Image (tube, rainbow, N blue to C red; front, side, top):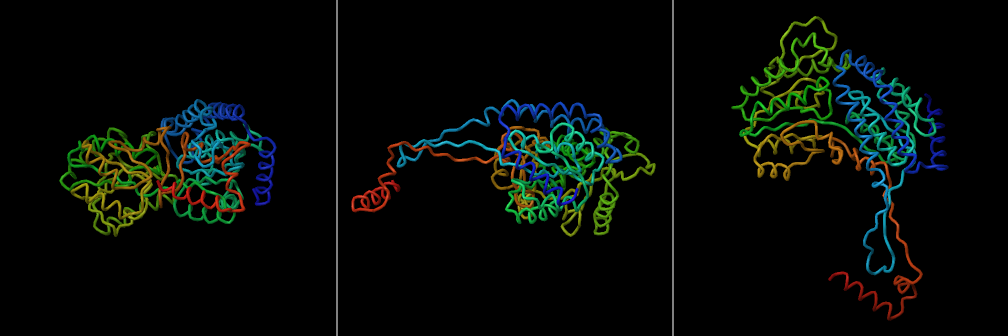
Length: 469
């Protein structure tokens, strides 16, 4: 789609929105339409996702994309009437008898740019929030996963008129053109490097942005916690989608004395999770050759600089295209590329630090992560860690699944992103919280109009003194 065509599409949407912004009834109807269409297109979506990866299990796509998307729609439908209610607040005493309230209004036409690793969820989940908030929307799925992008395009464009919700596909030039459109809000999920470009393009139009990025999310294990239980939950989160998850545990911090226990637990767990891994349809492949070679390069660099790599799976490769088996990487340091960039694959570095204080100091010296995982049963230590760290989200004694909490916001901080979505926070992201003051016929503020006579000056001085009490 050319830039001119994109401009015309956005103009058409904005005109349609101005004429008839969706009311509550229409929003609920459109959420139901989206849910029904996802169900109808479910099998094609699953097939397309697997095609993009070369191999990804049906169960992973159902569990990690279709189910949470449908449940998010259900949650929005259940709570939308309450979210849209007018909220009265206490008015300032010196403006009596004025009343004050706020209400959430849609922004207009918004842009949503999805991500390839969970193309279905990360394109359509923000759309749920945008529809709930009453917006029109244009979607741009990631070109890195073209099969799923095309199915999403067919799903959306067969369900909604283009002046309301429309999906376009295309290459990186289309993406650049898309991000420079004068949307009323732009939502992007992807890498930090691309996020910087998206933000710069949006700035030309003063378009507000939500950036859902990533980063190196640590998993810290306290010496008192069960290493076996921690390893199980860390590996379970790490290996979803072959490690290609923005909130996957990126590296583990634990005392050196626990290395052998952690290694033994990881070996046992991976072989239970994925027996015959080279012939296991439940283990996801790497998305493409570029990412495959990048991961191979991270391993090679680490080994050349003194790291020890431990293979966690058994079996013999049959030349599977872009399959990388799970591996632990010990003896790592900050000179290694694997400790400098987000891994986005089934490689798990293990960093040895003996105390929680050392672990927190290390994490705090790095860019703020999208997620932080801490394994400990000591309430005081947990509260201390929460108080002394900052991250997009935290999961205590588990990984990844804090995303599934509809009543918690999801989003990064600093280098891991800006803005939130999911549930009410997603509704707020795509809304304007508009303040309204309703003054009466007789108002105290009328006494403060010019000219400022002596008694008005005294009144102003009195109010100024009163404000400090």
